[in-house]
Image (cartoon, rainbow, N blue to C red; front, top):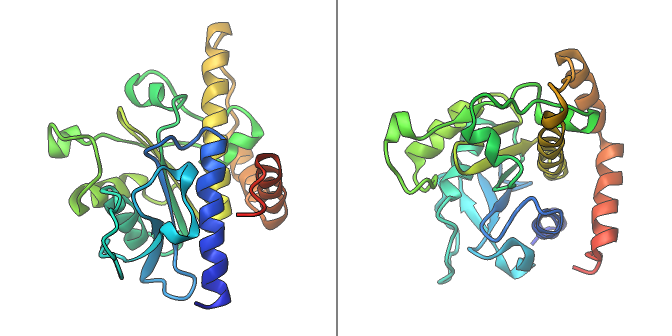
Length: 240
């Protein structure tokens, strides 16, 4: 194992723990990372609650979701979601799927708009598309557990950093693992703030220009490193 791969696996373990600690990912969410030396492969934990993921749980997959070495381990059924997005988006290094409870109302109440309401929320994008499996696939188990559904979701995501799944949750992507984690955390916080504002009146959202300029600043190296250090330190994950 090269130093780059060892570092990537450690960061992926930390991402699982951080997202669980920040109450973004629950017991059924997951986060992946494109292989730093093989862009045609990615890393994803075996099927396990993210808060408990260790380096030994990390598995390597081909882009179509085929495990490189399964060794009897159970796999996430929704790895097709990660596969399809990595296939469609060569610029994406990390994919996160979560069920943040504050986001769910925006997936089922069409009059609710999930748009950036404060500067940190800019990272999720000025508009967050909604993917609905029903028109294309009818009644399903609501999971993205095959590539046709994965490809459909990837098309809905398009070139954006975030996409919502009706009655299910959301996905966030990033040009780095830390950028994807930052986006997922602040998508959750932004959704909470929109819901808290609505009883008092119509929110004033950030303008598209404000979103673009603020997100570019926040997703640069220094803010990402500062946020990462904060999450690790307050959660006591430095020794993972």
